Image 1 (cartoon, rainbow, N blue to C red):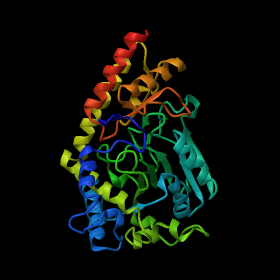
Image 2 (cartoon, helix red, strand yellow; image 1 turned 180 degrees about the horizontal axis):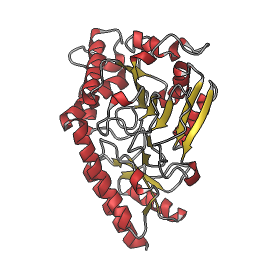
Image 3 (tube, helix red, strand yellow; image 1 turned 60 degrees about the vertical axis):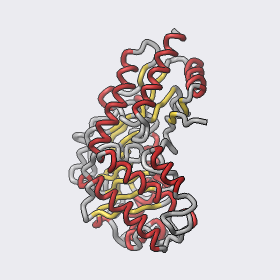
Image 4 (cartoon, one colour; image 1 turned 180 degrees about the vertical axis):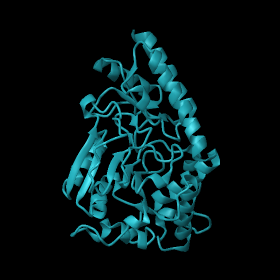
Length: 360
């Protein structure tokens, strides 16, 4: 069977070259006579894999020396607890709630201290990003938290919030490595890799060194302290070794594409193709305020639930996979991450145009 165009929100499409390379090395990684899946995480071969992956990520994102890169487990959802456990020194945090994942992080943080919701877009089903230029940031807040790209709702912060000097913490799971980023604007920038970088099972945390201390909330488990993992070079316990190996291959692939500047141009071109079609379509319409549209996740609807279901079924039959919207919003969603080729988006737009002709 030939490969489909996979528009899944995560686990999501990976570059074909990376998958082929991993397949070639599956039984024998570079003369070791074994797969990376079978390899000790303490071996010289794996040390090379994780060190090279970190070096390539640092190069891609221009990560300054005073930031640590951690390859962890537990997904982005575990970070919802780790962040307050490690950063709540005053017991206060401010959250900007622009989607389901920010909302879950906000709810989780309430277990550990006083949490203020200083802005939200829930009033319009998270279809926009609120103005964050002058928010009521708490004078004693330990940090301000955002989810930078909202996978379910298809919104993206184009301008980071004015945190009035407070540490910014950002979940970038669904926009990770999709465009250049100034790491120095964040105290913590993290994301699950299963959307734009690798297979499920790895979360990457980039954290400023001054935020890594032993001064954590009482009762914080050893495994949930950033210092535990920073001191051990992400090898305190057995890491998600094979996932890290694939991430490393994706970093090499991104470098070969020309880096994050080139990826941004490519992603803008793909997104424009789909948004331009939606803007002129008589059947389909996008659900996000134009200025807040994500380059990665594009939700759209026909306005008729039965027609939406028909579209998803017929698209699947045509080799356009995983276009059903998240269960909380319905409709359709096309996730067009880095590894989705332009041809895939073109195939989707061509199919939508044909479907519109047949169903209007």
